[in-house]
Length: 619
Image (cartoon, rainbow, N blue to C red):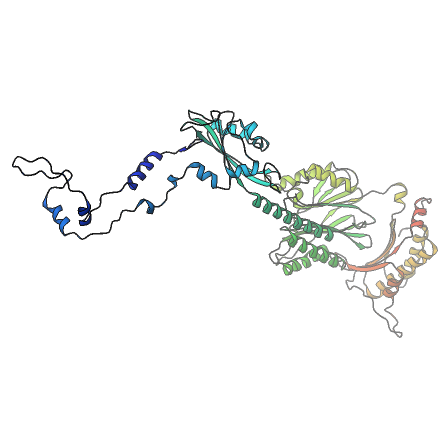
């Protein structure tokens, strides 16, 4: 393309102009009318036989003459100049570029001297003097960062494009709002085809130049911004929903220190369905849950909320972990058969020093012993929730005093370019060296695994520690147990044992009497309805007194209203009246456990922490 200030020289222009001239020239008419109106041809010189020579231009022969004599006049198919269809060849480059709404500027030479701007450009930036360098005549190109791009185009001869450059409101023209343009810089050849009235503009020899073409994309940019704002609001709503469904404050068990953290994916990622929970089951036992609903958005968060609520309800039944997972599996299929979720449900019993768990397709629990050794729990004990048709089982892993464990979702260890086992191994190394309180361990694990605010997946971590008690703290935690062999002497032995233990633990007389009464009622109920082996266990923590009786019968007691004439059936009602809470559960080896708790006054606990230690009674 050869662009000049005065006219455009396009390849083939002269040939097409000549063709137009040929088509526009009138042709001689044919037929009788034409013969009548045409002037008589002048006679040529006589031939050798004195016969006049035919007029010049006449056609010799009889066939054409015969056709001319007998042919009917036919309408001419030639079009007049006024009827010829218009072609783009009749338009100049100025006519074309001057009518388009895009911004157009033509510059030439290494200094990018201005040769032409169209009306749209002048409307946006104002009129510009021709012939001056772009830095002086078109400062807006420098502000938009186009001058370096034009240098590249001039050197390489290849077009370059930059997208969505902002032109602030009020720049040059009278616009009242910001505008956005996508600019394309293309190489052109600029030359003068005739005398130029302005010698400062004229360039006689062709020169390399750049055509700057700016297409307005303000509507597209504003639409994209509205879409991003809408997505941000939806993501914020999903994050708010998810955070509201997560526990606002974790329950803190007596025997464990627990902390958890949740970090949603980066700002460009929709929120997922990760969740965690800590549930105190009574009698010193604690349930720990972590799960991940596949998918993203409000739907995943809503399914997560339903599963978390169901877990808390099933946990109150004090079922074994695999039975809780089995119930969750059926519920997940009812909520949405296409929604898959993974989950780990674990129960810690301080009396047994173990973590009993069931996993539905989730990543393995990591346990660190007191000596710093990190071990993985066994593989998942069943497929993800919602698959159905599978009987889940329970596993166990030791977790005694001084031990800790971490439950987590796949966002912590999964990377697109690495195998997930490598991520779990990296977590094991990080967990082995992560010391401190549980909340500090959570932060250190996030940093060690490279989790930042821009991470593209949700991350949930639950850390628990079973601390070793020493000094005054150890005096607040005691255990005492008595084996009951049955017979009429079991009840008085149990009362005497409970009275001695509670007296040695320096409880107030009121709490002492309530504890003895509870032990007596639970033992009497076990002797009447249970089977051997039987055991009475007393446990105290820094916040409560726990009385528990186990036997070999798996029939769980229930509270019922006893009639005045009934001689039995009041034991559980008495327990429910005097204790802070009570419950029962089936034990893994068969049989059941019935327990009750008494909350300790804070002042009494503080005083006992500084009292002279005494050896508790034991059976």
